Image (tube, rainbow, N blue to C red):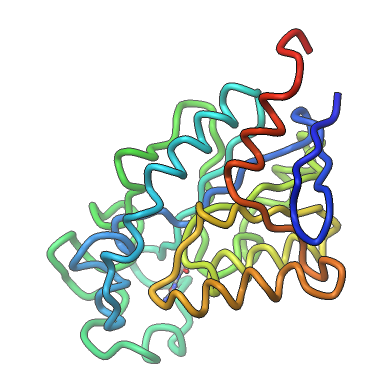
Length: 227
Ligand code: TIU
């Protein structure tokens, strides 16, 4: 049974059994003071606003039996998976691996690298630690999705124009149909978020589709529940 979402630039049609929700990098390092986002000089308070919407989106995906995937941008303790260019560039206050109030910045296993409590993964959900901005680079995500027959991805998370957009473009090139939930993604730069939404769905959906969360809710709730 398929579901049709009133999306842009046109309807996004998916089957629950072939769909994954991909929640990108909803980590303390980006959302709370003292982490990587703050180290880059950003006002991190802008990102916390979407947590309740992402929590409701997670509940919908779990209710409807989608695969749920969480990603974390993170590096090994010895920084062996962190290119020097990434560490040295764009760090006005602190670098990846430096000590911060939530532990070493952007390092796997440190308190700041965890997903925020309200969106914590449940047992059995896929958690991808990624050293890049894209969720497919140097990870098992593509094979994890293909092993489960996933063809459609619904994206949420932060930040819209960096890790979300990069991951969506990687997915699009690998043949997945991708929907970005507009009010379940945020940026430190609201204008960049808006520009990303527009570029994703431009040119007939060159990267994918976008829709507000309410459009997904209405689409899933108009279905019979005995499916
Ligand atoms: N800086 C910024 O906007 N984002 C990142 O560094 N990573 C993610 O988007 N997760």
